Length: 146
Image (cartoon, rainbow, N blue to C red):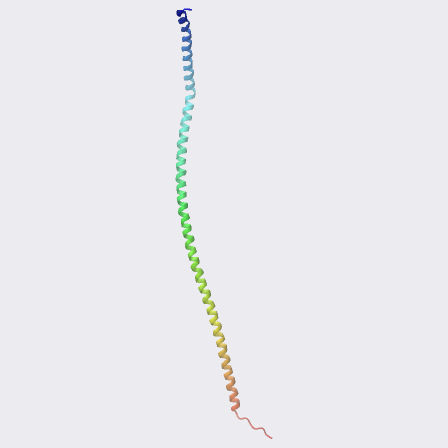
C-alpha cells in the first residue's frame, strides 16, 4: 500500500469520525434540549429551597437567642423573687417567735395576777372572818342562870 492509497482510505475513516462526532454532538444537543428544562427547574427549586432553608435557619437562631435571653432574664427574676420571699419568710418567722414569747409572758403574768387576786380575796375573807369573830367576842353574853 502506498501513501496515496492510505490517504484515500483515511478519508472515509475521517468522514466516519466526523459523522460520528456530528452524531454525538446532535445526540448531546438533543439530550441537553430534552432534559435542560427539567434540570433548570430542579436547579431553581434547589436554589429556592436553599434560600428558604437559610431564612428558616436564621429565624430559628433569632428565636433561640430570644429564648436564651428571656430564659436567663426570667431565671434571674425567679431567683430574685425566691430571695425576696425567703427574706420575708425569715422576717415572719422572727415576728412569730417574738409574738409567741410575748404571749407566753402575758399568760404567765395573767396567771400571777390571778393568783395574787385569789390571795387578796382569801386575805379579805380571813380578815372579815377575824373581824366577825372579834365582834362576836365583844358582844356581851348573858350569864348562865343557875
